[in-house]
Amino acid sequence: MPDEINPRIARRVFNAWVEATRRNPNRCKLTAARRNRINARLAEGYDEGTLVTAIQGNQQSPWHQGDNPGGTVWDDLDIICRSGAHVERFSRLAEGQGRAPDKAAIVRTEAQDQQAARFQQDKEEAVPCPPEVAKKLAEVKRKLGGRA
Image 1 (cartoon, one colour):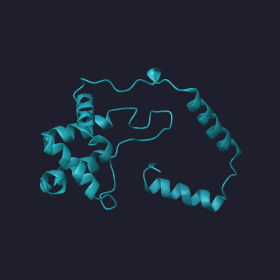
Image 2: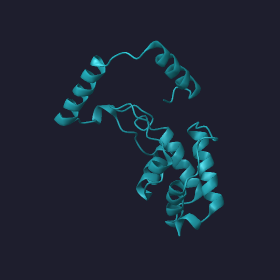
Image 3: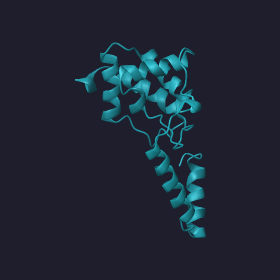
Image 4: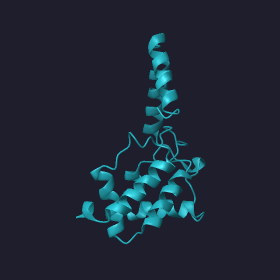
């Protein structure tokens, strides 16, 4: 059973991820799903050092740190440890052997362009939120260090 393999190693990999992604350790948990992803990679023969290197590689990928069309940060442990191929790709980035996705190489489909246009239109038509809500939102963003 993957969730019973190497509990100390899974915890150390998780802690390295929390530190690398600057998450609040009081609100971030080593869930069964995260533990299972880590242990599945360990069962495939990847060692702790390789998993930690993959975490570092994810942090070096502009695309996974939000430099993508949606501005979404893709740094969850579930993504990094999703498969052996993910672990290897991110490890190569950390070791300077891989290449982070290039913005110029992103090919958008017509459907994606239409979706982006609808999103922009919705954004422009949005009703501004009341000042007290905007103030509370700014406070929450500040507490989260801008990660909201």
